[in-house]
Image (cartoon, rainbow, N blue to C red; front, side, top):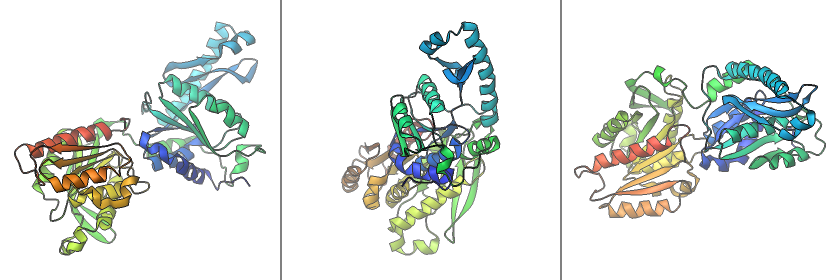
Length: 437
């Protein structure tokens, strides 16, 4: 019995489960408007990926418009089927006339959906093209061609439902086709949804404004430097939020046992990151009363949940919420950072551990998907071995960086500066949307 989806959002969540392995590839999610946008929005959230639309227009033979002899996309991309052009007897004037009309409609739709926001670059990236379903697949075929022309490294077409013959045909064009349901008695896409209400242009534009991960106008992002109170699970945690103008991301600090947001080492690293365009949230993972109980200091699940709560809080803050986030954990905070990074649906893009205890994240290490840097002092031998053992369980892109002569607290001259440099390099490479994995 083929599945009937409740609505596009449910279809998107189910599709996201199948696409979860792509999270490691840091893909770009491109929706075919209009119906593909609510499906793609769910996938983008689950993968922690940027969401955009891929607007294409088929070029129809003038006397038989449903017969496409090519397609156009943004950036002047034009793809022609030379054989069909020849068989249809189309002249250069015919092609130019059809193309001019479609380019005008393409520009109108791009402005309607995205406004003045630039498209997300896809050259060299894995691209996931999503629609709410396929019938003939002609628009999806055109989208694949356009994405290929823009330099996409790998193209995955993903839809909730399509007839089996369409899936087979598009499998020869895309690098991979993922379809949840391929009923032989297909009939129409809407048959496989209980709620198939038409998606409006306004809903498409709103979804992009809400779910796109990039900030289109960094110049309009003011700097922030203030004390904050973060409500999480019935407690109020104090912290300090510092974000430079034109920030490329924000780093949440998870301090270790016996430390706090006032740690001079964390503050020193935060200042260095600030100079490189990275914001920071230094906050206490425990209340003063909770800190008095040493069991809480080593409760990695509790600390990780607090970090997740702070991540959610950051996402709700004006002028900061759309910035990509990273974690920097120290000592037991390193274990908490990796525990939180492994949580389903967490969109954190990079983790750095400074003299941390990643081993405390236990079996969750294998679920971490974002690039992870483990920085350890060369003279901190016991913790170094714990980091190496933990790294063996990581399946994500990771690296163990050893700072020579440094002990656990990096108190030796120049060692903390080296930590800040390594962390800054890591976050600069992996935090921005569009960065490689």
